[in-house]
Structure formats: C-alpha cells, structure tokens
Length: 289
Picture: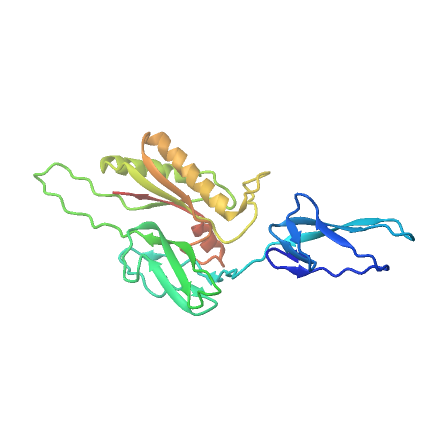
C-alpha cells in the first residue's frame, strides 16, 4: 500500500551482484527516483518494472510489481449525535419553553432554536428547528435537526348578534369522528355527523379545513380489515383522514383542506383501556380562518 503524496522507500533484494533497474510503467500514476523512493500522484494502481541485464552465467530478468494507491484523509471532522424527542402537544396561546426546546447533544456546545423560546405558535402543526454548534469545532461539525409540534386550537367564543342585524354565522368548533379497530371506513354514525357539520360550515361560509387522523397505540389488523393489513399506524391514520376528506369533498366540492396522519401521537384518552383506545381511533375536522 502507498499513500498518495507521501514518498515511500521500496526495498529490493537480488541473488546476484548485477544492478537492478527500476522504472515506472508508461502512463503510471506514480514515479520512482534514483534512491528507489515511490511517490504517488493519484489514487489507483501503480506499476513498477524491475529489469536486470544478462551476464555470462545468467539470462536477463524482468518483473512488474503493482501497488494500490490510497488517498490520505486530512482533518476529517465527525458528526455530533443529537437527540430531540417529538414534544407533546400544547394549547394555543402557550409560549415555547424548555419542555419543547429540549434537544440534547453528547458534548458541550451551543443550541440555536427557531422559533426561539417565548414564541407563541398558531394553532395546527408547526415545525421546530435547532442548530447545535459544538465547542470542539476542530474535530466536530455543527448539526441541524427538526421536529413537529401540534398546537391545539382554542374554541372561539360565540358573539351575540343584534336582532336588527342580518344573521351572522360564527366559526363552528372542531368535529371528531371515531373509527372501528384497524379500519379506515367511515361508520354510518360518522357520516351522519359529518353531514350535519357540513350544514354549519356552509352557514359560516367556511372554505378551509384541517383534517387530522389518529390511531390508538395497538399495532396490527382489525377484525373489520379482513384480508387487508395496514402499513403501520402512520398509514392507517392517514387513510382515516383521507376517508373523511373524500366524503367531505363530495358534500362540499371545492373545499380546501390540509390532511395529515399523525399515527398514535397526542392521545386524548388512556391507551391502556378498551374505551380509551376506542376514543383515540379518531379524525378531527377543524375550520381554518
């Protein structure tokens, strides 16, 4: 092995006193000087030809020696391991603090968050980003990572309309519909709830919705899925949100929607009980301004 750019001495022995001539093959990626030092100029294979002239007792001899050239890595910096669990959901109006901005690295350094501590996020899904700059910049690189956080929307108070004014609709509250275990198919009850909700959306002239799908924490296929097995709770939660989106769009063509599947995150009841898991198998529909 020869390292690129670093001359190395070639050791050679012969059973006769006749001098051995060493030359680099034509087009080779290395050179050899009179002191038999090899210098590589690129990665690849270096071929050195050894030739010994004939004598009265011996015929001439020739051989080729090959060397693999490796590139020298200088000052290669390492990456820092950064851990940042996804934070729990917060209510609208809650300022960001240490419970949400709590990334941790395996070495000392500086954390730069965006948005910064004290920021009040709008309702819905927001992204939090951190850049960690290690104190040891000579050996480690800065690293940036992101997580998402759910901000629960506050229910707007219903204003009192004057009797002499035309009827003014208020923004409807969120609607939640539930699903059977392992199923993304809307139940008859869920469809009825959505139909009634659509009437409220029309009265309030709502044209934008956020649809979020959730599951319980139990993996596997439900008895209503028959031969279909879901690709994990993430896919099942998205399929549930899509089912609501399709049905809603058939009742309100042209409605604009934001559809997300959030798996088993943000449970509203304990997953350790049957009734709790049944409550967590849900999709929420929230009007957007």
